Image (tube, rainbow, N blue to C red):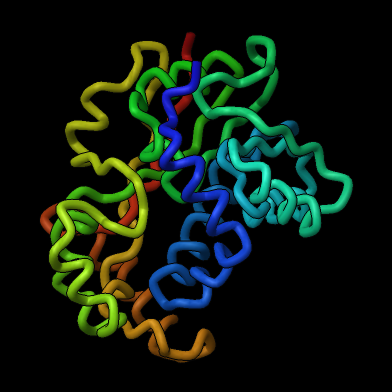
Length: 251
């Protein structure tokens, strides 16, 4: 049985047609770049990759273009319809991230980006399911607790003044039905049959850039370069909007 709430499923069904518009804002442009570069780095030794929470197929398309054989999974049928148009001929399956319809060790690597694990009630149960179907490596992202509970509300007035009050008053990010985890606590509770390879922060400075800034602005590239320097500092890393986590399967 899926632990993904009906609210989350309904939310992603409703926003499917507008989902890609998020990636026109500075924050999401940098997030997209950094997550794809992380995936490129960590799945080099793979052949067959599972993309869990594939959404509209942004990462699925990226992996296919790199020459990998890819299967995309998402719980939202409308999101998969957009993915089908983006990546013709790709194998796309509607399923829940915590109840994958594959036999054990079906894939070399398992990739799950843009906070898929933050949309399930039990991320560790879902991780165990990821491990079950994976032979070698897991690469996934989770939303940063400090960023989504504090920093994004403080910087909302800069990014989007019209939505600033909504962000400021929300007990959680009112736009996205998601859970946020302090990275240290999250990593302390990983399944026993995985080994932590890498945990890196993504997206700190771009959180303060206005949404209206053009996608080709030099400020976006400058903020990305600055991010890569600042997020190496432990006391700043905890404020990242996203954490990219890499695990090796050892069991």
